[in-house]
Image (cartoon, rainbow, N blue to C red; front, side):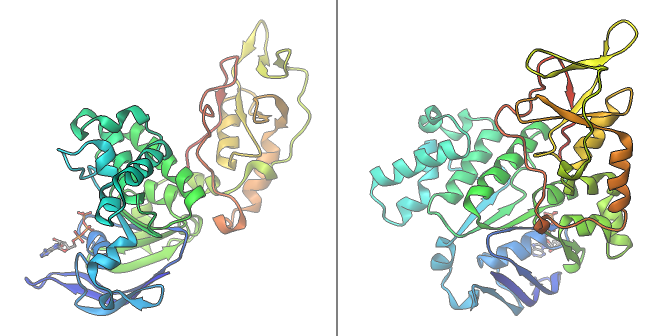
Length: 368
Ligand SMILES: Nc1ncnc2c1ncn2[C@@H]1O[C@H](COP(=O)(O)OP(=O)(O)OP(=O)(O)O)[C@@H](O)[C@H]1O
């Protein structure tokens, strides 16, 4: 665990970037620092690995004051990922990833083998190993940045706006990849962003900072959306809080009815459409085992009769969710949403999970 205990950072010119910050970063989870430009996110992050030293207060890592640990030793246990990856331009990808193992004195063969393993782990083609950074796309470079930070298997990962220089589609896939990696690796991650949607998607816990480096609220994303502490947090969260909250409720709880005869299916039981006058109309699907209530609602809205089609992982019809069944759950959660700790946070679709089932359905899958 990392703790901030009354941490203040005053720069030489008198700017107070962080003011009496106290919070706990739990082990094995993603904690996001989010807030407007200049609120002290980067300063807070860099005080953890002592790229910046606090003026007063104390930061501990597993109970030890980081000031008692010499910076090179401290940083060996802390991976660091920055915007635009910060790769060494004259080193091949494989050697970029192996930077820390080389520094640690690993033999070249072992370090390179580790780099190749990580290249695959972050979803890159091993054939890219021999290229130079300029020969990779921005998204690929960011993946290399993540691989490099993971090379020596540090328990802690600091990520400073790592995905903000790429376009929204690439950014979403990098976020999904990080969630997937984290479900295997369970690192202690501190992630800085100014994008509240990214914070809500990635964070197990989200710390909202206000300018002046003061903590406005720290909570799980569902609580943040349900109970913003004040007008600043409410304003920062923006619109659609009610809909976005639904991403934190599993669609498992939706009551299913048997599929009616109006729903046409193919020979494998996959939906084809709702029978209307002369043909088939559109429909939306959701997988109750994997999707959220938001995805189920979206699926209902995609069907002209307001009924969502529930499918299994292979896209076969399991039943239907009528609007009344969805409304029951909306009512049940009107006062609050259980945190991810209660067992659900919509995970990114698995490989191939984004393609609609055959028959051209629009799926109700909604990003969180
Ligand atoms: N070396 C420095 N000397 C003086 N002031 C600084 C220095 N570095 C940062 N600051 C100031 O400290 C405050 C916090 O900066 P910081 O970079 O931590 O914020 P941030 O929340 O990460 O911002 P952004 O989202 O724009 O990157 C800002 O007012 C900034 O201008």
